[in-house]
Image (cartoon, rainbow, N blue to C red; front, side):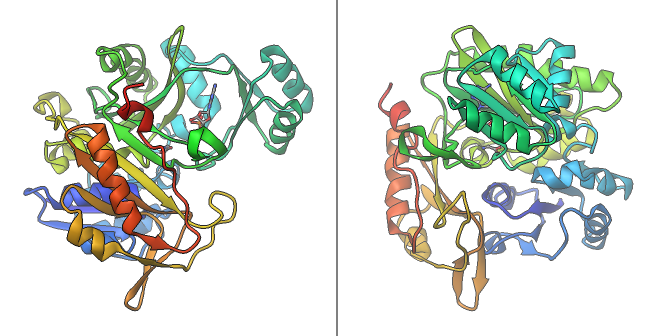
Length: 417
Ligand code: AMP
Ligand code: GLY
């Protein structure tokens, strides 16, 4: 099977790493990719948002399957353009990707499908904003309606800050605050059959102890030893299958990866958000534990044959990933700093720990930072404590001027609290 992966983050590096280990994959291409992905896939230049250009590249490469990683190309209709060129694509249509592209649309779908989520108002005027904030009270949850790379959400006890953020957005969703731990559960679907992956937990705040601003995600781990044994089954029955059924009923079936961001509240599971693609950094730990070769299941989703696909097989091992972010991330990240120590990790920590690249590029012989999240250092172990130790040992070998990372990824879960 010849594959083309679209994207350039650590998620795409994790996807390409798994695909490169799949004996059914005979050629692996990625566009635009990054310096780490270049070690496992052939890179190509393409505007990832240009469906025609992506379809032309896939045709030229004679690809059997195109995997679209990030949300922006999906919302721009890139998977549709690939399918129109007669090539199977893993990723939802432009219409179905609105589940991530518009928080208001996602709320409407959830209401129609009876999926539990925070109560909310969609507001477009300052008067509506004031009313909604007043109705729910503090802590306030204010979400920009459009795509914002995980940074359009403000959760604050400060009414002035909440009002200012709301009024800076054209259309805003204001909703009830959900407490309780967060879980990310992904499912692969062909629009009818839904296959859940293993749950993971992401750390969204920049600093230890869940302090600091929201980010795209600073680390993740899987499995979740503290979660109820029937969590996946419950989310399948109350969230994932009803949502997929509702989108099919509307004539806009969702195929690809459905990401449910959940809060486990005292009143039960609630959806915080949907995404229309693999999460980053959760994918790094979920794929670290997947034993079934990846290409076949992605192809089955793209071709509508998931019902016949054998059950996924999972490792009993735990996995932890720690994101190394550049100076000043998430505000105005500095780029162009050289990264050192990658060879040491490869020599001393493989195969249990390895470095997935996010924002990196090659400059002559050097690899330099090229984005806010730079690396996602991933490790496996018989339990979370061992996986953590290995991940942090590898993190300690890496040198990137001004960088920062959280030191508490999976710490509580590993300690059994
Ligand atoms: P989102 O982009 O919708 O995932 O929101 C980003 C982060 O904001 C989530 O991971 C949560 O930590 C937080 N958040 C979003 N919605 C809520 C809510 N209703 N209650 C509490 N926290 C929330
Ligand atoms: N880990 C959060 C996201 O992928 O949106």
